[in-house]
Image 1 (cartoon, rainbow, N blue to C red):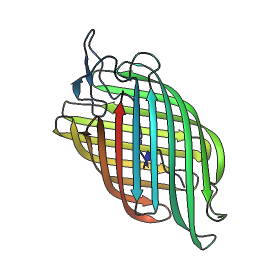
Image 2: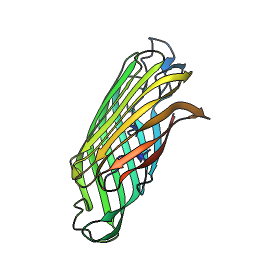
Image 3: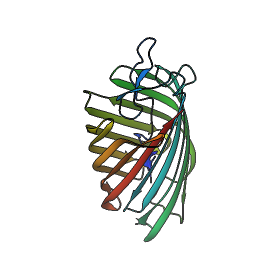
Image 4: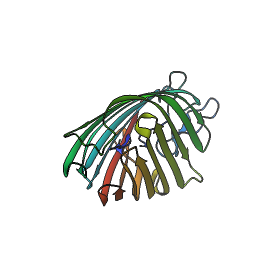
Length: 260
């Protein structure tokens, strides 16, 4: 069974997000004004900041799955507020269970994944676009042998990912995170739209698609994105979840980021 790194979606995912790039606007020449990492809203920021961003997320569903993700995005040259090279390190861990049709009992799975990606991010005044390519290692262990589930064992795959963040207007947000791995043909895509309800805080709908050679599903719900607790920014999501095996259920997710 596949759950993307942006759940906790795979949680902490897509992070879209998850997990992603600077989500920032260009700094004016000689200035210290950039966009907020999460929403693109303009804010004062020191040039020496934004070398590393750490994202964490978690997603839990009533369909018996719980996943967490932690992602580090690094700007090896300049800062995350500037267009340039990016290095991404990501770890995912989670558990799930499902009724095994072939074995006629509940099967419990444990999934772990590590990813190393190299990419480039383009930063504009109202948008940020990043693309990545690299490798991932994933391990799936089952509580009992299930002949009906081909997604088992440990393997190495080629992985690609992309992040898009856009502020069509000062009061609107569009964010898309997607990834695909040749290992088990695992895919994940999350899209969010939002309207500002307070400076830097957006509320709106979100949709997620995820799957692999055994599992596929989708989620649709709402999110509140961009509120701060201390030095961290957060996003909360909840809604309806559907998968091929357990059918309908519900999900909740939380994403957080700190940059330094």
